[in-house]
Image 1 (cartoon, rainbow, N blue to C red):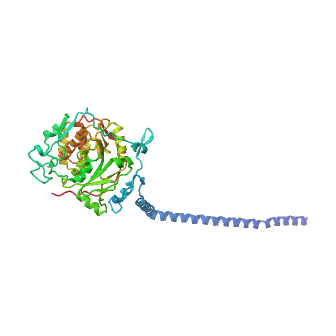
Image 2 (image 1 turned 60 degrees about the vertical axis):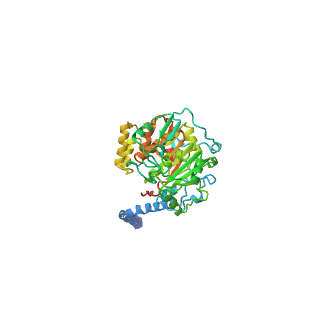
Image 3 (image 1 turned 90 degrees about the vertical axis):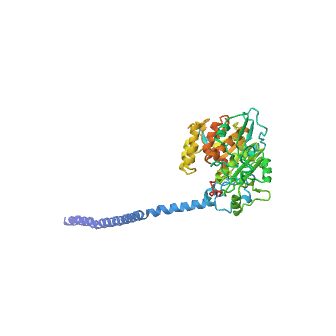
Length: 482
């Protein structure tokens, strides 16, 4: 019996002998848990350290990547040549190249120069081109009507007033800047009285009007050789840069037909000539730089270079007496569409005699007058004189004209040379001389007064953007000094 008790005790002991092993295993497991807890605490401390470092230096973390991105973008834009023009049609000639100059707005210029990609807009949920030209093969065979205008026009003949029948003029002075009665009228413009101004808006079969080139001593002198070339033009694209203000941009997107039929003429003064020669842009023996025929104008009639620029802009029918169509392009822009195609799209297709862009920002002459003063484009006094006269004449404050904006932007003008459009441009020029050089103020007024001109195509801003690559003015034009 004692033996069985002993055996039971043995069994009991043997069971209790196993306990330390179990405890040991438990202790091992506990130690593992402590080790894991230590790793977690280390990670927590590391995270807290990173957070404190980020809070302290977060400005650097934001600024450095942004600075790196700006540097990268600037480098990429600086190297970007723009969308390449078709070398066979749109090559920019070396003599007129811009590689040697350092313009102020160089980044903008490099990004826009020679771009031919179309400008588009959304119509009815679909994206379309703003300017739809004929296909290239049709442009090559396009024939513009160059016949005489219809005999049904209300104005059949224009007579331009000159000094031959007036008491002042050729024998009085050789200074084309001579002002008359304290106004900007001079020997180039003649002295249009207010009665003559009122009479000029009346439509008769024969209209007698002032239209510049009043006196032989009025200035704007062009060589006989250049005059002969301009008289040969049937279709003309023109621009001007007086006072050295802008560079010359070669036209692109031209069909072979236009190269044969269209004259490209750039009017420069001697200041621009000298500025361009310093940049390596020299006129060739044939009178050209690239596609542009350079016409040097001497004895400019106005001290204000902006006013001198209105002469080729508004009076191309007097400079190109045998031209049937003309396109004006401001010197700050590069013309990038085929001129024959543009005339077909904006004039013939729409049965229009003149095409001009809507204004991009405003719709009313009176709103534009406030903007001109606010932006210091003209003095408040001269703007007030003009607007007061327009109110007196009854110009409405309407913001729409024939379903479009009543205010226009005239950096591109496409027109047929008819007696009515010639008359319109003469009257516009006279208003610019009489009042301010801001032609946006006077064009709607003249169009309103000359009510017989109905078929005007005021195209949207996106069409203007498709016509040209805008560079902006490179430098300020130097004024003439008396």
